[in-house]
Amino acid sequence: MSGVIPAEPRLGDFAAGQLIRLCEVAGLGPTDTAAYARVLSESLGPVAERSLALPPPSRSSLSDDHTPVEYSLAFLPGTAPALRVLLEPGCATDDLVENGRTGLRAIRAMAERWGFATRQLDRIEDLFFPGSPEGGFALWCALELRSGGVPGVKVYLNPSANGPERAAETVREALARLGHRQAFDALPRADGFPFVALDLGDWEAPRVKVYLMHQGLSAAEAGSLPRMAPPPGQERLEEFFRTVGDLPAAGDLTAEGEDRLTGRPALTCHSFTETATGLPSGYTLHVPVRDYVRHDGQARERAVTVLRRHGMDSVALDRALAAVGSRRLSDGVGLIAYLALVHERGRPPRVTVYVSSEAYEVRPPREAFPTRDRVRAGL
Image (cartoon, rainbow, N blue to C red; front, side):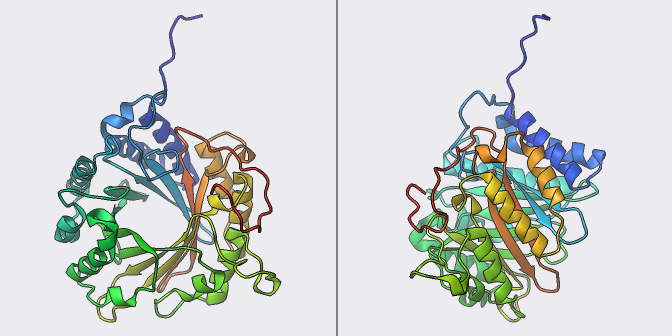
C-alpha cells in the first residue's frame, strides 16, 4: 500500500475524459483533442474543479441529472460523425442574472480568442438578459469541434426570460432585429418557444434558429410542420417519428391518439439564413427518445434503425456510447436523450444523436409497460 489517497474525481476531469474519447470517435487528432479538452474545462470555470462527490453546482436544465454538459454526434453517410459539446458556462449558480453575465463573458472571451464578432448577439442582448429574468436557463453554448482547433460556436438563449407569456413577442422582436422581419409569421403553431440560437464565428451560412415545442404531436403533424422550401419528404419524417417514438404505422391504428407522443414533447427547429423570402432554410425534428423507452438498450436500437435507414454507419454510435460510460445500456435510461433528423437546404439529411454525460446520476430503467400503451404514468 502506498498510503496515497486517490483524489476525488472532479467535474472538469470527468467531462474532459469523455470528450477526449469522443474526439477519437469523431476522427480528431491529438492536438485538437487536447485543445478542446482544455476549452471545455476552462468554459466551466471554477465548477470544473468541483468534486463529483458533491451535488451538482446548480439545477441546470441542460440535462436530467443537472450535469452542465451534453454531447451530440451528427451523422452523415460515409464519414465520421461531427462532434459537438453543449455546456452552460454560468452553471455555478442558479441565479439567472449572474448565470447570464457569466455566460456572456464566456462567449466574448471565445470571440476574442478565436477572432469572431458578437454583433448579432449584441443586437438582442437586452431582450434575453433583463434585470429580473425568468425561465429555466439564461445561456448555453455549443461548440462544434472541427479539425484545426477552432470550433463553430453557437449560443442558446431563453425566449421566456421576460416571462413565458411574452416569449412569442420576444422571438418576433429578436428575429426583426436580426433582419428576419418576415420569419416569425412563417413559423407553424406551437405550444412554446424553448430556445433561440445563433451561429457565431466561422459558418458558411450563419443561422438564426427558433425552437418550438409541440405537446402531443402526431406523426402526420410532424411531417407537415416544415416551412422550408423545398420541403423535406413528409413520408421520411413520419417514418423517423414513428420509429423513435415507437408509434404504430398509420394503417395499424386501433384507437384515437395512438400515433401521438404523450410524454415529454417533441421539438422542432426552424433555421433562417436569408431574409428575402422570410422562409426557413432548415428544419429539424427532435424526439426525446428517453421518454419512450424502458432503457438505453432500446434507445440504441432505435438509433441504429434510423441510422441504417439513412445509409449511415452505426458502429461509431456504439463507440461513442462506450466512450461516455461503461455501464450496461439496460441498466439505465437517458444516456441517449434525443434523436433528431436534420434537413438543411442544399445538403443531405443528417441524423443527430444527443448523448448525456451522466456525471451525477444514472436514471434507473423504467418498469415494464406496453410500449404502445398511451398511459405513461410518472413520465
